[in-house]
Image 1 (cartoon, rainbow, N blue to C red):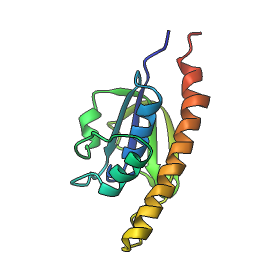
Image 2: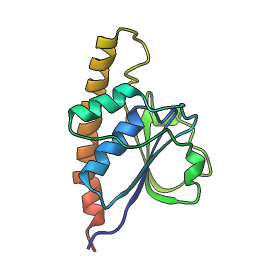
Image 3: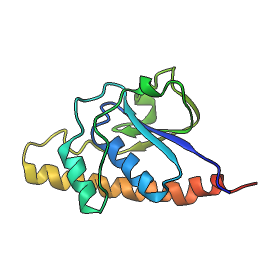
Image 4: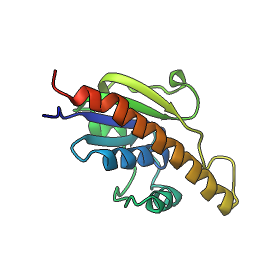
Length: 149
């Protein structure tokens, strides 16, 4: 019997990388409770994130970025920060409750470029990096913790 796990992906804007990570992990196991949120959420999910998820067969249904305060009542098994830099650079709001914390550092695929072809290629590269990391996390960490003792 699996133990229900609750996971939150936290980023600054919740418009691209954290949304991709959320969607990829949901594809791995539908029994997990998976959320994503931003510290300063954008107004909408980046269209390139939706496009590159579609390219790997993931239909993206999340309507808009969420603010972390929507989940202050939940205690998460894992809080996974997603973004540039080191884990120390991301200030985690004190109202988020979690048992374990991880950081997955991925560069921002839309930060430096304006050319749509470069942006799309950057989003594909980051999507693939996220996909690999999430697959590893799921198979090597989560599945072992979900087994009964």
